[in-house]
Image 1 (spheres, chains in turn purple, blue):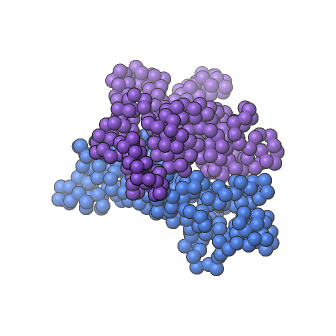
Image 2 (tube, rainbow over the protein chains, first blue to last red):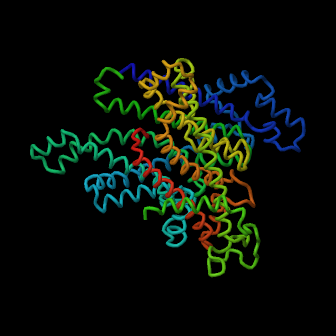
Image 3 (cartoon, rainbow over the protein chains, first blue to last red):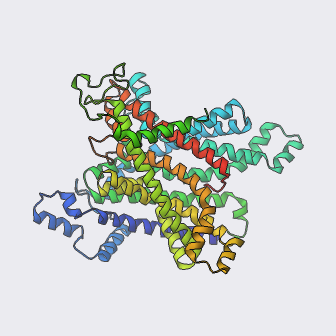
Length: 309
Length: 263
């Protein structure tokens, strides 16, 4: 058990180190001279030299990497070229909005997927089942930059129920959360259905039924508990996709989170900020994945009490 | 009903490959018709510059088709070779490959693509590069996992005993057996690539104006939701139709080829 925990934490640390190096290299794949791209071709030579020096671009690559990584350890992500503010500060301002959006989308996904998936599994082959699977197929196929504008059109422009964009009031969260949560809901409902069907075919379910338990008790006490584990894993793994999708959703709804900051940084060629955004989202993704694995190990008695692996 | 997905994909491919030979003028500006609603004369209406939406949707099919097919082809070829070689040779090389794959998987895919094409600059070529860099990992992981289970099969050991070289064994005895799961994965990857290309174009990182892409049409259309919803609905429906068709086909292929290993 301890062995499993340590090895999982170690590989998370390696992944984060790798991610940091890759993010560092990002600025070096800029075609041509990154300083020229960031400042524009007409910038005076003195300004260019100053920026080159302040970003350390005049030093050898391994020194730059060392400088970047030691900076990260001190939580120093550098400075924005555009606003001259520390990047950490910019990220701190934007993270709460993205977290709120992500959690709301997760809530939307779960509250659609669980009832739908359970219903589909219990009434396998029925109209409910077919409807749920059709929803799931449609949900994974509609990209959020299509769903978002359509939702805005119907619920904000025509019906006027929710604001078109921005963060004013709790109503403003509904459409972005629906947009971001639908794909996850689609994947999850499929997953809930198939795991529940698998579990319902197990011997212990037959035993539970044979000893005269009601259908509700069989499903709630015996089936759902065992179907929950794989579903939790999928939620964890899909959270990364959710974070990636948040970038586009935030643009659609002018939601002031990390995703919007990412795209702003690209448009302004503010590469240090872009690096910071990518780093934060990826590290969050790695941490969530690791936490999911560890939670799985804690919840699953076969891993918790077994011989470690 | 059965043939609708295939039909949609056929139309998509025909628009993409045949588009340049059709008498289309996707950039023709018709000023009196700015934001004109769909009607008898132009059945998908006109956009904010007075350009015909229908012709831009047809031309946009080319962007989405070319990008997604190329991306999946590159990612499939590279990923398969890396994955099978890695599992076949084992040892340090395999260990390193797994680490590299893990690091790539530590990024949410679309985010890495956004960052790469943001840094490389907009344009169709850079979109293809960015999406291929992100896409090969899935194929490499799948090919590696499959090869690991296959490499101890008797026919492979027989080939080794007969003195076949590495490449011959990979090409003749391993990759044909990997083909089924890889084809299924590739089908779903096409759907992913269509969405990703449109997504990058939506963010302004894809093909540049005046060239048409479904993603950039959507982006421009979102500003006119109130007065001209067809600007969003037309390219949106095109993307949805293609992605849905590819996904349905992928599901069917998976059932037909009985692939159980997909994660």
